[in-house]
Length: 144
Image 1 (cartoon, rainbow, N blue to C red):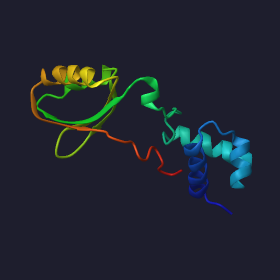
Image 2 (cartoon, one colour):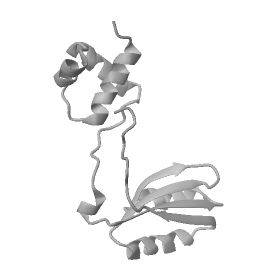
Image 3 (cartoon, one colour):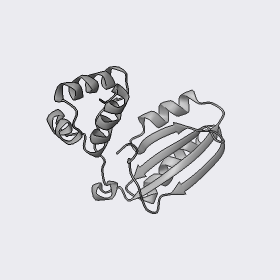
């Protein structure tokens, strides 16, 4: 007999592989009764473990050929975060040690990226470092 934790892990693994899998498919492939899959799924949502369903995209095929990770240390966070959170070229933002933020950016070209950097430099930046992505080797594979 499986525990709730092992059920949760099994269900999450299936959803990480394909978030469009039906509960009956997950049930059949995992050996967990479909009602248990459904109940566990609802609990995972209620507990905030499953926050949303999203598609993984190939940015290059969408015309976004330039990706860079920007490390930023600055004095004033509030206005900067407002800018970053509303910028269309920002994919993700992480609070990190050593700097304040790690910003995952995606742009059609280096020109748009440098325009973005010019806007970033308008803030009271202490330290700024950029690392361009050459190749994306592994993507969203945890628990899958």
